[in-house]
Image (cartoon, rainbow, N blue to C red; front, side, top):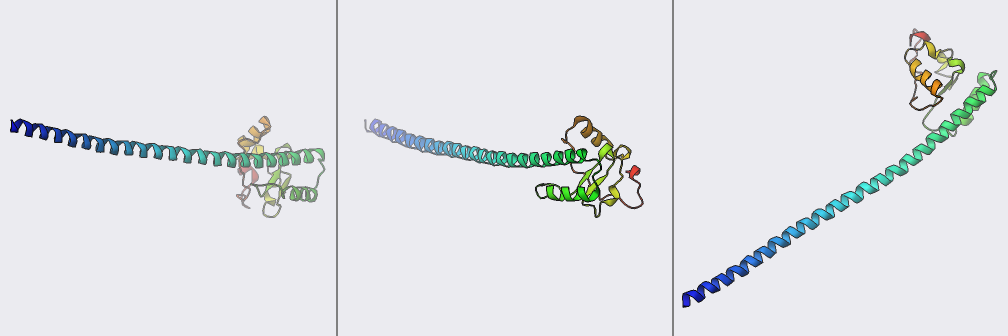
Length: 171
C-alpha cells in the first residue's frame, strides 16, 4: 500500500509540475503574442504618421505648383495681350513674377512656337529664335503642351545645352 501512495504522490507532483510548466509556457507564448501585437501597432502608427506627413507635403507642393502655373499662365496672357512687347519689358515683367515663382530659374516665351523672349537673357541669349517645330529634342513635348493646353508632363527644359557650333534646328 505504501507503493501505491508513493506513486500517487509522485503522480500528483508530476501533475503540479506539468501544470506549472504549462502555465509558464502559456505565459511566455502570451507575452510573445502581445509583443508582436504591440510591434505591429507601432509600425501601423509609424506608417500612418508618415502618410500624414506625406499628405501635408503633397498638399504644399501642389499649392506651390498651382501658384506657379497661374503665374506662368498670367505671363502668357500678358504676352499675348501685348504682341509688340520688347525684351526689356518682358525682362522687367518676368523679374517681378520670379519673386513669387518656385522651382524654376529661367523661362522662355515662344509665340507661334518660336522663342522670342528668354529670362534671364544672359547665358540663354542663343535660345532666341529657336523654333520648337524644328527642334528634334523638344518638338513632341511642345506640340503636346500646345494641343492639350496643359503644362502637365512638360518638365524642365534646359537651354544651357546650346553650343555655338550647333544650329537651332539640329537640336
